[in-house]
Image 1 (cartoon, helix red, strand yellow):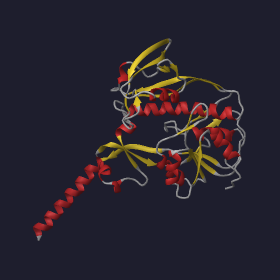
Image 2 (tube, rainbow, N blue to C red):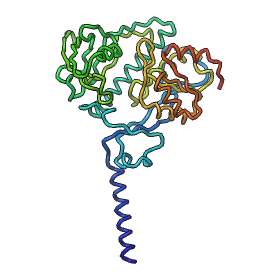
Image 3 (cartoon, rainbow, N blue to C red):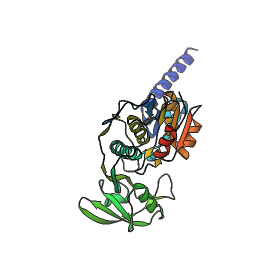
Image 4 (tube, rainbow, N blue to C red):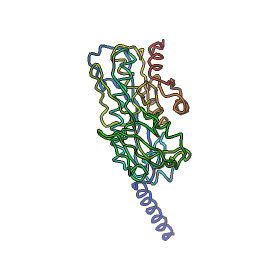
Length: 334
């Protein structure tokens, strides 16, 4: 009996040690977990703004970190509402976590500018915002493009077809088959270059050709007055829609009617609301903040939000203009 007790104790101790080790070891996947939605009041400052209605616009974010080995092996050890993703979905081959963080910070800065343009234009202000091409903000080190394309290049044509926006660039490259070559016209400083690059299959969509770059909008922007947005260390482009709604609120539009409204969605210069990642976590984060409505991009983001809404009212939109019209004409009272 004594020997059995000792053996059981040793096995139990070994199990505890193994659990601790597996919990402390970082895995080869990433985990997304919800963060509570937060109000934008005080984080968006608009020159000359006047008092607005009661209520708040909320932005939603999520936590991203390496999954622990134990979390990869045992799903019940993961935080509530989490999702585990393969590394390549967040880090294209050849990209480091530091590079991803820098890209997210750059995405946020451009998101702030584009949100200001979209909101002020919709409110009738004169804004200069001329799209100038797709700005390269990252190149995967093991992608074919690494030998020819540099971060900071601005792509203005694909096989002679002009492209002024990232969406137009993706559309033109998407007309090819993986393995086809494309000739990209780029601006590099004061030079115009013709660069021929082979495409490769997307890691997540093998039928879709890519060249292994991350791009954002390049534009000449001149606002009629200052708009300052500061979310601290939060990165990425998905807060464009709530930024624009808060700017409209600061300039006197009643978009809240006394309600707490969360929103998510990347904005294009024309006001189109683009899909974002992590909709499950962001919906849970909106619920945790006890908001009244959650405004999301149409399509799969709406489907994902409805799946996890648990009674939260979801408002799908295709554009900022639609979101502004829907909210300002709503008769909802909270």
